[in-house]
Length: 325
Image 1 (cartoon, rainbow, N blue to C red):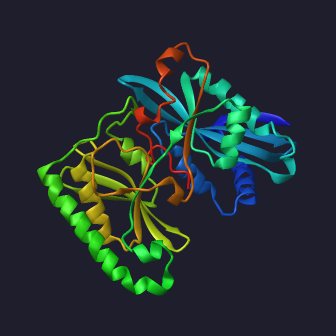
Image 2: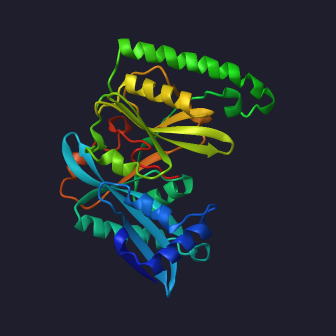
């Protein structure tokens, strides 16, 4: 068994064939080289780091780190988001394959001045990363929802005819918030830990064709429409007014989506440090799944600057940082 680390552009076609095959064998969905390349290149670096585990000529394991530049207050640091992992079923008897691949990525990323790894794992991966790789919990990401077609969202199929009423009510709710936002336009409080947003960040980050973009004056928004087992959901990825998240930008963005897309529900997933009355914070018992944000510090000379990293209240983190679908 051999583990090698590559940047995205260093992988050969023969590697991609085996990696795609491994993904499709390991998960209940199909992917392609083109989809993976788009995902791994949609960041300000233009590539990701990959650990590939080989057994003879077979790729038996794979995991990746998406590189981003973050700010701690106004100080820039590099962080990598752990994603896209698989170990072929017949080799999972060796519980350390994923750990060994992550360790190989840590060694490479430390050489390139990375300070921390982040991740939003599922339940099994969370327990694994906490036990074997020393990751720690920052906190769970929140869901903020606007269920336009409430009966569809609640899966009350025989009462779907009432959706016209719920849709009308939520449109009125959105319109009132929109009007109020022109009177009182709150602005999001800057978080201590946040992405470094450059002029080209959004263009690169949301370059994939499944993202939609809308602009009205100084307001811009990015979103994605997903069919969630019959519930057409609009995920609001980001919204900005003159480079800042504001209540007006939120209301204008949601109003645009409700009136141009045929969706059952709108969701914003992540931290939202801003006064707003439009979206409803979803109680944990109604969330489709928990989304724990975790971190693991690398070998860095400036660990003291990350002493407060485990406090979710100090973070700006959401689907803009990582959309793992």
